[in-house]
Figure 1 (tube, rainbow, N blue to C red):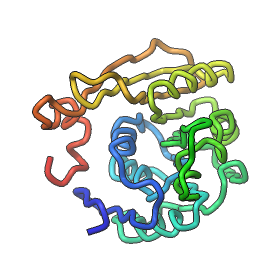
Figure 2 (cartoon, rainbow, N blue to C red):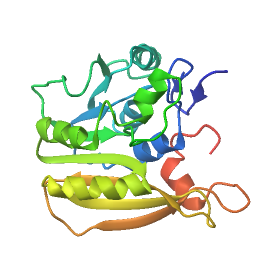
Figure 3 (tube, one colour):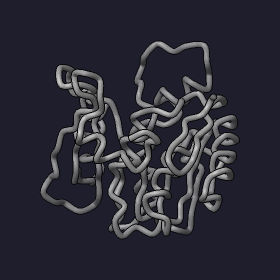
Figure 4 (cartoon, rainbow, N blue to C red):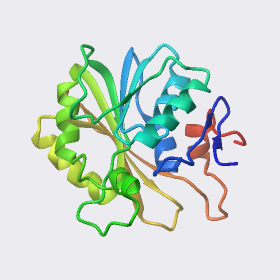
Length: 232
């Protein structure tokens, strides 16, 4: 079986460079969708984030953008086979994407490798490396496609997350929520879930551990993601 089966939908990912991952599930479960009517998913890949957010908030009008043709085609298939075929998938770069709608929420599980050694798989390189979508271009896309009350949520490895926070701050955005994630209690923090907006507020800071030392899911992770996992 090539796909990943969730409680309400299935994601096929055999034609996508980036497979279904814990990163995507974390972000889709954690992002603040309250009061939002429209959402933009930048670099949707399989369509996972768009589907997770649609399950959480059925009234959301969701648009997802994907540059890679194989991933775009698979995202179309995954959306068509889901309970929410109205999710709109666009095959283009976010730099060339335009919209009359200014989105309430923008979400992204973006490429993050800077200047690291690349493999032979061009699609995987595009999905993992920032050459085609730098952090600055990602921030500029949010600013161009958002309004004064919009929120921007994303996940990055901790080191890249710190760089992104600095760059976002320089571009007039405020970090409103920051959840630092570790795989197990004895591991270092490895991921940063971040939420930005144009409004300064007290920072909501938290930590999350995914698995206990016996490899079972922690109570916090179950509470966050149990609406999605088939056997949780």
